[in-house]
Image 1 (cartoon, rainbow over the protein chains, first blue to last red):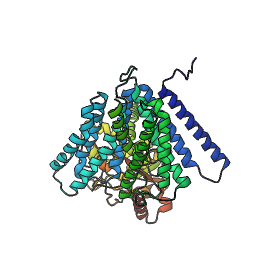
Image 2: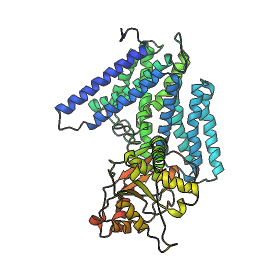
Image 3: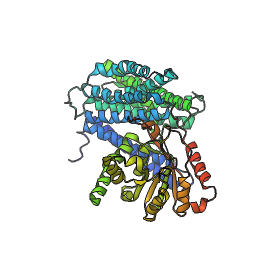
Image 4: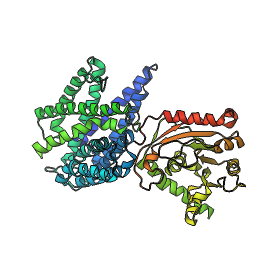
Length: 319
Length: 216
């Protein structure tokens, strides 16, 4: 049989459900815009078609194996860091320092591709974080020095270090199945589990907030975020994580529930922490790279906090 | 030889410049692009970096590349033999003699002749590149040119970020997004009175519409 669902790997099976869900959303989008002509559904439609592209690229990377996944996340880090540097204030005198900051991306992802965990985990927070201020001192400009150091450090932390944890998930040792740089092992399932739950958590918090939201939770940073949205989203994510845990991870149901609740909360924190940066600078979106979603950082913000959390839980308990 | 150069130019933009502009720099349109579909036309833009010309050419489709000519100073770009070949054939500049040194030079006439042949000119009203990410006062060349060709549309375009990516006097390229804003085309015929001020106001509006940090 050409299409044998039973014999597929669980990653592929879950991915099929994801595509089915997105197809359903696309159909709903069409029906809504046809039946209710008064309301403008352009943003919803843009969002859905952007999801198709993002899930398409992500799925392709999972199929092509760890090396392609690592390259994809290196590219995402590059675009995210460029977006970050384009929206935050930087000093003309630090141009060379910014160049070094970009260079940490290929180096960091090289450690990942070669599976050197010890270097991967200290390279940014130790070596890069010490080298950057040193290079800035060489330039000799002290005006706004501290702010500039903080700015570059936080950019590397958000866009390179935390996001690279996603790529390292596919390098985690695999049990049973054969694994190489061109064929994913169990890590691909973990990556799918984390990215799917984090993104669904964003949607769930938004939807619960729209339906029940009354009490603002962070009025000075993100006025649309409510306590009800957060609680509803976290519970939804927890339940989904519980259901999917047995399929995609080595966890049993209650462990999945706990991790899911953690992802829900961490995702919220990631979202709000980027909002705080944008509010500080005085802009709404980090860019317009993805139609309907804003910039790439707007889409990845929750992952910057969920990725390290999930990675270390997995690594500590299971790998 | 002419066709070989044309093919080289096409390849240079299709294989090297467009991918670099789209992927390494990255363009972000702040509004719907307003660009000419054919010549004659003039793109007028702020000038902070050598990358400005590359980005403006990349904004236009490759099929009209043969019509696009950036207006550039002959004394700067035709300094040596290789640079002259590269500037004339690959970048495809329209070399003009800057006035001042040579009183017989007629740069506006050269531009008008090219427009007469249906070319799309890229013109920087500020003249040279100036301070990174700062707009200097416009020169009067743009008024003289528009006056000579009153029906040719001028498309004001404002770019932000290239003065950070590759400022004047620096050879190190550092990636930054380039934000581009477009404005409705203007002709001398319709905006003749106080044309200079009208162009200045347009650029001021475009500049204000981008709320991103410049250099500290």
